[in-house]
Image (cartoon, rainbow, N blue to C red; front, side, top):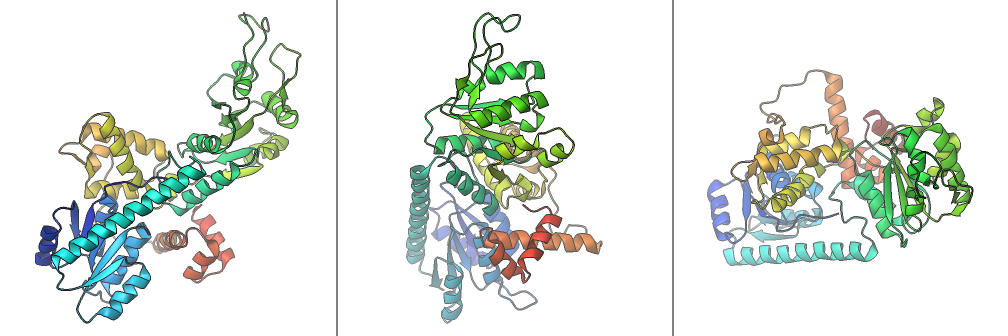
Length: 453
């Protein structure tokens, strides 16, 4: 996992005169501003700040609940590592301490001394950077599983931790997930985190004609067929001592499934046209977007092979279920492609952020990556808009059409509540169920019905 560096400062203040004064006194920091909860959340998603200064006395809503506390809670949900400095009235120490208990970094009483504020912000930045560097060092010392991944989603973070644990063993792993979710990145990370000295070799079982797939996997001897002028090793032998990824394994023809099963059982292969058994030490990682159990029922996949492959099963969540990741990944891709093209790194406009958050991502991370590459090329004035992304921006709340279908309203509300509870508890089902006031079985039922992994 990686967190964007050089993140800006976010100033949340509803008094526009004071907002300008704060911006002026903190002019050595790159900053963005917001004056209410909605704009603060939008600017947070857009800029991914490391430090936030926030007026705790934002105007209360009609339920007399402080908007300041609501804003603090929402920002910490988006990134628990952000350093929030709350600004309070002189006689408001009780609420300031409550904010600290909720997770705020520090508090200052108004009127704020500009020098004290600047020093506090600088100290918050240093702590943030130290914590991020410490996380990076810990990950590097443990493994490189996370090096190619950018995520803040609890579900995806659980997948990374699971992969890291599995890497220490030689267990066969089955990665399940939609196309474009990063199965090969995880398989490569699994190999890199293991102690295997051999190569990481990947082959797409659906991309090679059935007549050639056997020789690609197992190799062949000289004279095995017309054109076989010399003995050639296959992908399995090439990966000897390392890791073999069989992508789209659900498309493996039945005759080859039997031969692969024998290899997994005996750990020996015979090249096409050969009689000699060749011992192989390789870890196999299978990957597919298909429902293998359904293919077993249909007679298109061997049940015994499934259980050989499924010693460890890892379900990879689709991008649409990864809370906050579309915008986070967009920042990372924009930086990467802008650097490669030697262009200034573009920011994301408000309509781009809304479009990224509401798009359903049928192509997952691969779709997002291609979209950002095009957007970096097409963007003008160093800013990416929804139009550059080829997306339609979602309307602002006040512009949105009111949904009258009660079933849809309830499902949307339930889905958001479940995702928020899981995000707050780092995916802990028991604690999430407690937050929601329901039983664990009921939460599982809700997750299944709402297609939340």
